[in-house]
Image (cartoon, rainbow over all chains, first blue to last red; front, top):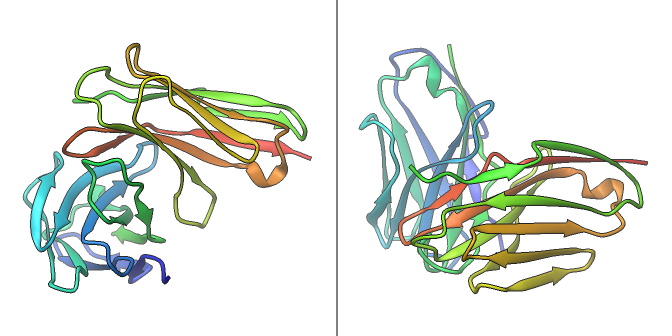
Amino acid sequence: KAGVTQTPRYLIKTRGQQVTLSCSPISGHRSVSWYQQTPGQGLQFLFEYFSETQRNKGNFPGRFSGRQFSNSRSEMNVSTLELGDSALYLCASSSTGVGSINEQYFGPGTRLTVT
Amino acid sequence: ILNVEQSPQSLHVQEGDSTNFTCSFPSSNFYALHWYRWETAKSPEALFVMTLNGDEKKKGRISATLNTKEGYSYLYIKGSQPEDSATYLCAFGSARQLTFGSGTQLTVLP
């Protein structure tokens, strides 16, 4: 089974721009969650999509949004980038989602640098 | 805001030593406690998911215990090897999200 893939792996953007990150889950997984990791912080939960619906959302501003397509692939968008958005963005897939006993399978992450 | 604490923050041990880390979490609204291993330049990898008070899980030289009433979990590594060097993350699972601790960074010296 192919693992979780994320594209691009690295990205450099300028303050004020917007960015879209992509995540393809493991085949058959319907839940995709997004996390942000900044230096000194643990993984911070952004949101979870399940069957094309946002099911849960973390404590992030509205500049962070996402969507999920019918094939379970998910995109995350950040508008009006700020320097503080520089981070590693990880997505994770699971068969039933975060509110369950199933483990999450993580992708390799997208390293976003905002200058 | 949920508080998931891991200690110690970092740890250096000699090859062959046994070691353990702690994860503290809220004792209410508990669904599951996850442990992940995150090696440099790789993706976090699931080690265990535990749901019941008193759960004990084992995978090779690594084991974990769970106490949901007092809100803590221990991860044990027996006979540490250099390939065990990684950051070990725990995550508290509620109905709505996983909340991660900041991790314990383990370095095993040959």
